Image (tube, rainbow, N blue to C red; front, side, top):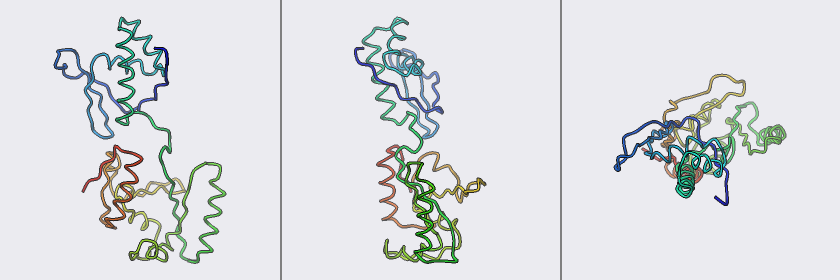
Length: 229
């Protein structure tokens, strides 16, 4: 292998287990992805590639396989195939925040509904988060009903709390709130759809056109997500 390349770390929850023999009669293995409840059938050589994956470099894995008696070209072909397979099936560990567009930060203050008051809060938050290198979008949920109809062409009720805003997220599985004080997450629904990557329209705020646009945006960044319901 004249050119080597780094091997991306695999997701820690993946499980590699013995499976049924391949049609040729050779030993078979199953790679189980519990996040999406998917099973991938692998051969013995692919299993050995994964066993050496922590070497982190393609050349090091090739050398380990050759030392075990594997043909050098077969080893190279298997490493490239497993590498491409892992990337294509989202089995690699992505960096925290990878493909995240922005972070929504909610607060609720109905004592002052002016744009000037919210703008001051937005500027203060921008200064607070500037060292994180991320885009954080701060919004006063007490004011959403004032600007939402003009922006989206649909009525919006006056909210009573920040949780009301979370309840009206377009995609049901994204209705999750993490309190700033470190308390228990706000979860109006179970985490089942979020865990399995299922995007459903939120029945508490059914907006088909906006939901479709949001789901398309998510799937453009995480193509393993599915739209259901």
